[in-house]
Length: 495
Image (cartoon, rainbow, N blue to C red; front, side, top):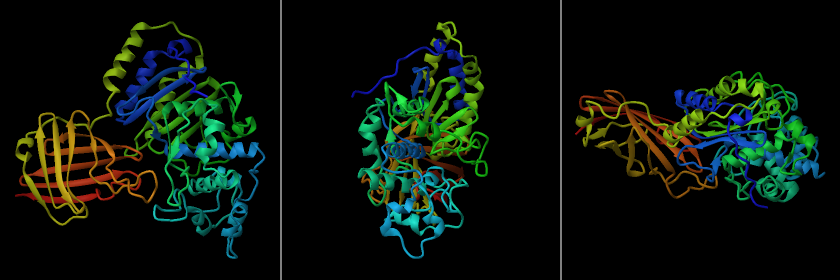
């Protein structure tokens, strides 16, 4: 079956002013969110879609923990086929891992408990590492200290186990299981893929890659209680339950957009439900108003990126959703929105600051010998060439150079080649694709921002402070298992 393309309409035809869409985007820009895509759908029609380079409608994007909702879908469909029950004990699928000292709390944990993040472990987030050769074994080795099934604690290991249950029951990785059963009937790309864990299985907790349009269609299936494009794809009962508030999560909520409960790998919010992935990979559904907002981004380095997106939608879009009445077409506002997206939204947001400084000429071409430092930087040099520059340096892996734009992005390749690729633990063998910009945030401070836009998404920021013949650098990264060498302080003296 070919991909299903959503009909396109104007915002006004489904009750949303083009000016409100523009104000929503402006709020994100004002907060300096590095957005990659924004899509809006209502009444089965795409009313708005825009992308920031290098992303477009055909490029697959890492969805991080939104991947978990896809794993949940595979579980629900297997339950619908009668191949498992949500009340099955998780350990029943792995008899070879059961030992005499297995905790009774672990032994009684069900598939349903894993779906609701109600596992018996106090350890949150990742209870495994990129060095663990068997993430299934890690589930059985993690200390269990309370009864499962009633209390929520976010833990990606629960999804790792669900991935392995799908594999045990169906004989397929979860993306392969969904390929003809879900992706194809939903009109999605059928070559959706997932980074592999160290043990060679789909890492459904964090690493599915699909397009923003694919994510929109995925959300639309659940908006229709499993029915989409003329077919019941997911059992209706499971689809309803999955997005319902089945367990309280208010104890761990970081802000008011997260504290409305949790379903089967779906989050609740004040006006509906959502899929949520690190860095603002979001599908935010407003079922009462038949509206879905999809975003992809890299907000890892910002505080409250998801919250800003939710609140901006509540402030600028929700008032019109609640009225639910078509509006007169507004050619002037439509043209303004088109001009705005063409001017602002074609390039990733750049580093704040000025394009030049009184220090620029003094710094240009000087070599700084670095004191002993955690990053093992031996020397560095800056070269400025109009509205671009190059940071040259030597570290433990050799001599490198990163080109950056002043007031614009420069596409390039990060010089480290040992970061992971399509399998955790295996080097990719090439540098990640990056987009880099810099700005003088003070006359004596140059800030460099590197966005990784590859299989792995992340942000590296370095502030260089100049004082006479010295430079001091402070580097910090917000990235999963890469940019590790680029963290800390280093001071050097011009030669």
